[in-house]
Image (cartoon, rainbow over all chains, first blue to last red):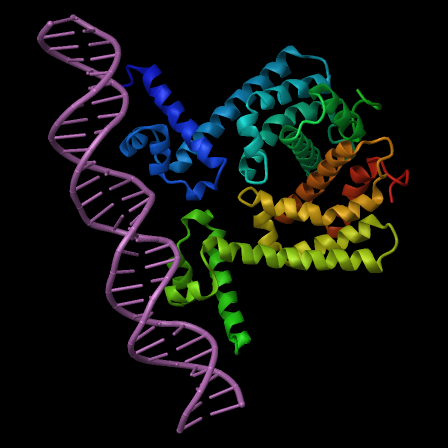
Length: 191
Length: 191
DNA sequence: TGATAACTGAACACCTTGTTGAATATTTTT
DNA sequence: AAAAATATTCAACAAGGTGTTCAGTTATCA
């Protein structure tokens, strides 16, 4: 039915933009649709042409980010046959950096743990290639290990995004050598 | 003004109980005060005698947990002069276990990242005693390291709470030897 | 029994929600 | 330029939540 996708996409983008500007200021449950449409310069009814409710527009933003991340991961897993963890991390964090406007908030103190969970699931294959597969560890123990290193990594990246006091490469090098490379790994030393 | 603190405390507890039973079922923003008071068997007005709004009662529950945790930490830091990380962790996780009804949810996918942040702040002194203080690391790097190990640890504990497939002591031993003890530490080997 | 505290019940004005249907504006097609 | 399709507006709606008030009821305790 959408014969003018550019127009409706622009409208959606404007609404998302307005929503996000409010979301950075206050929790989602205090954001009304009237506020969003007023800020974006639309009629309240227009919102309902594209989204069900406030959570729908929030999900749209998150799904969009997840999609982009999934794409980058699949790409880096295919074309990068080496086990260079640092380089793969660099691709990832660069993407976060590109969308840091969203990532900063979603991964932060007022963010969404479910979003973090989804990110961890997506990133897991990369770390998993590096970890030793069930060598002496039960499946449950591997789950715990994964949880540890994924959460730790994501938390560091999140904090660095909030306050990047060192260059991207340096941060990644620091993290890999000081934390991840000390995990039970396929290779002994740092990568 | 409270001449019968037992009564009002019981009322507060009943309201909190009702709120929590709803909170485990749906997001906080869809919980109305009418629902809470109906479930607890009170008049809607009674709620406003004790809490400002739904977030106020939520905060009360969280603050209560934080207080208990803070107390345990201060206690374990004073009376336990040894650097036995495992034992201190055991005290902590036992407390989580006692209040697992709340901890499970608050630390989980539908939980509150701000609560996790507060927990990490409180736990930090314990890990900090074990970590090497700024030996070759800048203050910023120490922050990142802290973030990594705190988030990792909390995530593992959270996952174990959701699905405790091994005994408490075993989980802690596993985590300490496989993860935390590999961090830049004051002692070389596992504790 | 009488005083005090805890709780109820009803009403209030105000705001948000999601939905409608008809009107208008803007673009695309012919 | 006229016609057709699409995008957006506008006003109204019932339903329901919010936080507050105040007079009335019930329970507790001394």
